[in-house]
Length: 363
Image 1 (tube, rainbow, N blue to C red):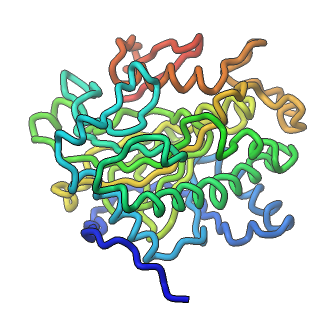
Image 2: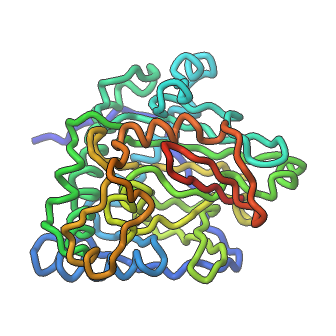
């Protein structure tokens, strides 16, 4: 059969990798090709559990997409920013404070970073139900590819990792998978995200922070590695460390939802984005993500039948008898992020209470 002809779009040229002497986090590398057998998953579950108990982030390789397919996704990801006019972006911008979702565009300058400085981040968010929203005209011919990409992330990456997380808690493999149904109501989405360089005076006022230290909302976050540095994690040693780019690899972390569901066993690691290294400073930073969340009707309660939770007596942050539903939790977080009044502690950490749960921001 003849190969399918893909729509022609401008090619995205990634920046060269940095040569700066940065202190990188030492993250585990998980070979997902070994997850095809029960024995392989059992072995990987131990590796993932160890990675989550040390750094809270890990790399995934051999996930199933080729380097050329990876490059194509970044070509698509750049299009909503460089090939769509400002008026059309504004017409498709989301009012996240009202809707509690980022579906559509998040424009620049909506989030407060520090000392009056606002963010310079644009996002285009595509719900995994790709046809459930309006899209810019330039993106419409590419929707079949975005749909296939969402399904690949959901079923081949996220579901595989959820099985490993369940095995790490000595639970049935499908426990968390059954909470992440592709056709259910929820905000699991593909995100294209572009960080633009700021003026030197704003960098100084914001202490070079582009996105404050935070934990993610959902269960599993998938970042498609790209060369422009800036992502840092707050390590167990109490230091900010850089995440290194690995060609055609994924960077994986868990969020608040998985912490709730695992009774605190899988703790989300605080991470932030700062100004790129000196040799990449003039390059925008293009990101491709898949943010996975439990279905909206899932109660964020610890899996108390886990032998691991019973052994260690963990309960996590969500310990009352009536934990929030996922939909309620994520809407509260999204509506408040970057726009609510925060209480700054003596240590400099900013705090707020959302749905009765303490949320922290690090700058």
